[in-house]
Length: 229
Image (cartoon, rainbow, N blue to C red):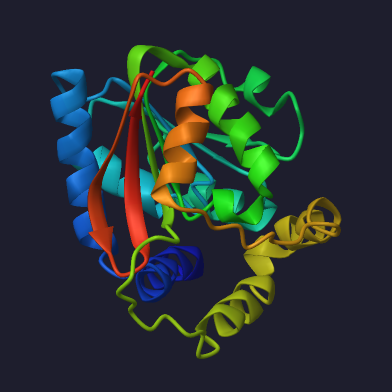
């Protein structure tokens, strides 16, 4: 099935842009279980794309109720087509002030992977507070992205893989309606390519009401932030 193959190739592609992705997810799972005292029962995968991370989470925590939220209609269509019926797929736009009001909750865990760099810094601060409103008391936010204060680097230069994947996805007949919706939904979307130091994120998370902030994983310029509500 083409959609399934697209999801598999997405996972491989993202491994190029986020070195150590599989190890990061293992660390994220262990961090969540340690912080929560058990496997999370409710999980929000924010910016979850075609559901590859959600699939990995369900492999680890098959009893969890997992919600995948994203803006891109093509990625959401892939998630809906390939995730089990127990998963929920929702459309959200993190640029809007009320994006979190449609997602229910509270969640034990919110995971955000390679997503918030699309937003400017001031909006990231707001989104941290919005996520806190979705978490149960002592719930956990895990945010994986580039951190500016990591000195060693790993080359993640784009070799055209991203463009080739999207050319193929947008040419897939089964995704024609989603591709049309994507042209409308993302016509004014650009990436801020925002990055900041661990200290910046720690201060922003503390200001948003999180009690404990740590960095349980790093590789190259990439890091995983863990923040307890």
